[in-house]
Picture 1 (cartoon, rainbow, N blue to C red):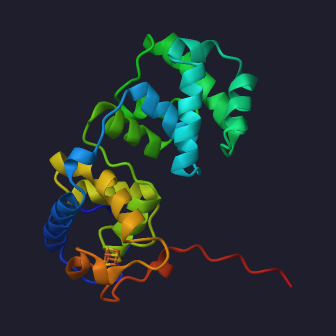
Picture 2: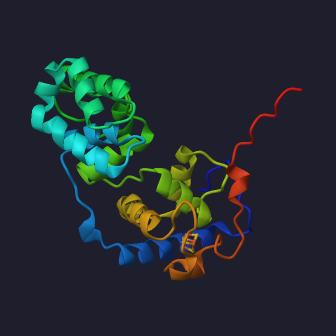
Picture 3: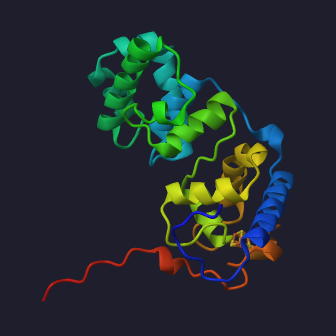
Length: 240
Ligand code: SF4
């Protein structure tokens, strides 16, 4: 069933959209094959996701490696002093190091105290942890547990809207709803992985390379049918 909010900037029957979504995912899977999707340890994935928020991948990788070298597991991080974790993150150039250091230690303590040291495989339970929003919860499910989930990060949000799979004026949680309705569940896990690669290589935030894109024929943005300005918030006018 079609989600109720948001409006598209072009006409398309819902069943046609579903067919097009399936073709898009298949083409993305061909372009960015499955064997590049790695599943990791759920706890590592969760902590890495906290570190990664508003950080470049290189900084996240370096900081996560340094953190786990010093604190190899959940018990060590649960016992760690928040200030020491914050100092390590700061040294590694992680933004929002104060909050992230606190979230990492608090989440580890909650996991140990309430979940016997295991990461729960449920999106709502995961979202109870400090620093874990819907995107990170879905990342843990997909990349930590290998479950069917669609984390909507900046790439998935932008590309889904350009492709007319979600309206330009909806927030990421709604984009997830649209994608879940349009794409068969057994393919959900590919979506983030493929769109992140596609967003870095071709469908970049500024200057998408539509001429080289394997999705060109399926893309309303390339045909001038999607107006992304519709989704932007207007700046409030200054009072005279
Ligand atoms: S055709 Fe252009 S806008 Fe559409 S998905 Fe490809 S790069 Fe992005």
